[in-house]
Image (cartoon, rainbow, N blue to C red):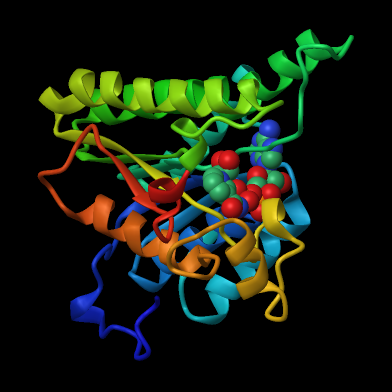
Length: 262
Ligand SMILES: NC(=O)c1ccc[n+]([C@@H]2O[C@H](COP(=O)([O-])OP(=O)(O)OC[C@H]3O[C@@H](n4cnc5c(N)ncnc54)[C@H](O)[C@@H]3O)[C@@H](O)[C@H]2O)c1
């Protein structure tokens, strides 16, 4: 959870660092952006929902933080380079990248349009992370900026569900990429890790969870800690991974024990 008292300027853990968060306009990405800003980072929020991204920027600015919203579809390779260039032009460096964009919908092997649905989700949940990481890693290595890349995976990188092969393949693929990128970028002082959330409320993926039904729905899902998680709890892990200098290539589960019972 976020600390009750805001940290003093000297205690800020991400002071003057520059962070890019994809999908930072909503849910987990928004939680990470707000928390990073609270810790002193300057935020670039890349999202297709510009009005929502601007609302996050406003919230950060109202607390004296610095943030900018960029209207970009991270599946579009040609759009990523110019946005990353703008971030560097504005703040001079990039230290943290959070690849958070992700969507979900069911796909059955028996659907006639399954190939298009498969490609659409792999593009959004896996290829986009590759494209953004490639562009940012190039800048970081060329300019010798050390830093941290965090990929948001899922408990479903490990746990299968019917009609979910595309989602599991994307998330398991992102875990594999995390480990390969960790090895490739370690010589440059860039660490790459993943966070695997369980069922998190106040997010696009779990809009139906409310104060009133949280405990009941968590029971139905057999979550050992008996409740859904919060974006702030994923953000805590993101701050940890961004600041601990000796962790790389890991997938950290923040799931209330979900994978223990599935
Ligand atoms: N919510 C959960 O319980 C949960 C659990 C496990 C993993 N995850 C993962 O966490 C991440 C965030 O999930 P969430 O539920 O917070 O999502 P969300 O729907 O609340 O937010 C996703 C954001 O991504 C943006 N976006 C979608 N496609 C985009 C694109 N092509 N380019 C740019 N922006 C795009 C959306 O506009 C939105 O602002 C996803 O990768 C998801 O797979 C979520």
